[in-house]
Image: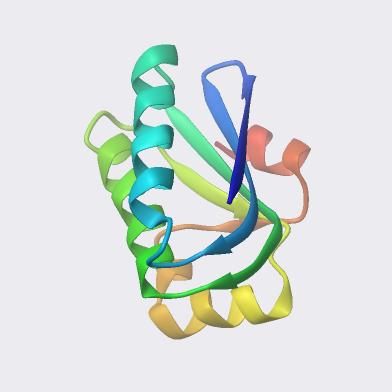
Length: 111
C-alpha cells in the first residue's frame, strides 16, 4: 500500500493507494498516527481514490483515527470512494459518524 500526505491548514489529507486489509493495516495506522502527531493535525481527510479493496482491518484504521482526533474535537471524513469501498462503509455503519464528500474542497470547507 502506498500512502501520501498533504496538509490543508489544520487538516491532514491521507491519500491511500492499494488494498487496505489485514496485511498492511498496522503499518498504515502507524504511519498515519505518526504524521498526525508530527503535524499536530486537528482533522483528517481520507482520500480512497486509489483503494480497490478494504476489509474489516481497514474499517479499524479509519475508526481508530476518527477516535484519536475526536478526543481533541477533531473530525474525519472520506472522499473518492469506489462503489465496492462505499458498500463496506455502508454495511459497517461508518457513514453514521464519518461523512463522505464529493471532493477535497467540500471536505475541507465542512471540517
